[in-house]
Image (cartoon, rainbow, N blue to C red; front, side, top):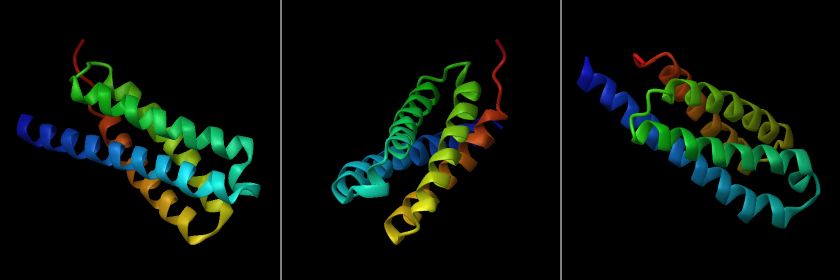
Length: 118
């Protein structure tokens, strides 16, 4: 069981970092230069929240924090919101970002069920 858990955590860390990188690259390399709806304040804030939430969740899991489940639950919520915002924009680049966010949300939701004993 311990080995399986380690594998799930390692996978979730990888997915979180992929989501962080994808959102960061999309925000700074696509959304802001494109402007318009892609650069609206609420969308930009959600993408920045997602970038940070993914980094923090990965950090909690990397150091085997007993609170990683709570952080992963929050990350899943942020990733879901970011995915919805990206999908609303409708173009292929944003749909790709939304898919990565949803994959991260699913992985973090799974990790949020793995509470550690205090």
